[in-house]
Length: 323
Ligand SMILES: Nc1ncnc2c1ncn2[C@@H]1O[C@H](COP(=O)(O)OP(=O)(O)O)[C@@H](O)[C@H]1O
Ligand SMILES: [Mg+2]
Image (tube, rainbow, N blue to C red; front, side, top):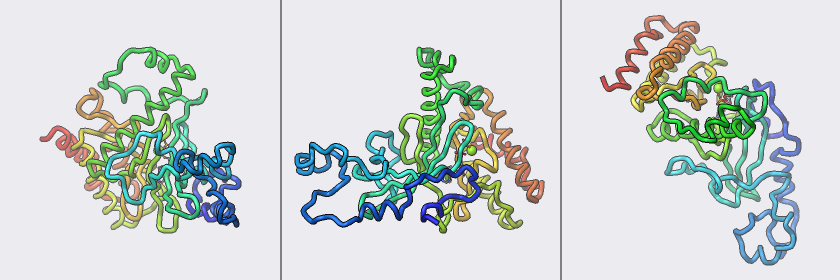
């Protein structure tokens, strides 16, 4: 087994093994014997002027090995400061795609390793790429945006008309909405993965991994014992209170959009986050969220008196409107 397969959940049937991107293979290639006076390979252009002068004629040698890309950090919108210490922000780092974590209707999620060459620091990221291809529509588009001020423009008309240009703008807009929500929630102390960066229709997040390196499971995959179930419910209520205090509801809350990361419940998949105060249908979305998730907990055996959607709804409305 190549070492990176370890990071991917067996459950992801559509895992797409990228041939040749295994860690062992690349490490071996990077560490191959070189003469001492040979200039360093795979250095990012512009990071070493001397190197640039010597090697200006050998453009292809400036590319990272094995079809990887230079870290996209420099060109991207960044997450909230202070940046976590595990995050690799060096412009000499290389992004290697390790495989697909999940393919969805509206987005695909990939596992990416961002590492300094020659065995330096590295971190793992989940890259969520919104689709902009012909046959995919954003079923979540309608309703959520109500109450947001949208300027009529060439762009909004293109999005409404679903031209290729319009679809790619929609993908960018979903990515921007998710990144904005995650940034806001992370800063408010909510349990969400750290939002590393956004570029076009791609959002990169902290990869939530179990100690063995596999992806944190979705709540839907788990069958917790009664104590564990009650603990997860308590965590959920706290997280939703925090969102409500920030004036927000998740908007697509389910046991598939909650990960259990080393015992901590984490909210993911937030592009359609709902503004409880500004959206005239905010309470509808909140009620649906609460019903969905309370239903899941009740079906797993949490007493109905605890997993009570009406009571949770009232609590969250009170948080949102400061009552
Ligand atoms: N930060 C992350 N760490 C680990 N796994 C993740 C992360 N983000 C997403 N995933 C995995 O990818 C799946 C799809 O992500 P999600 O944001 O829910 O997109 P979709 O719109 O396709 O439902 C999740 O169910 C989860 O298994
Ligand atoms: Mg999801």
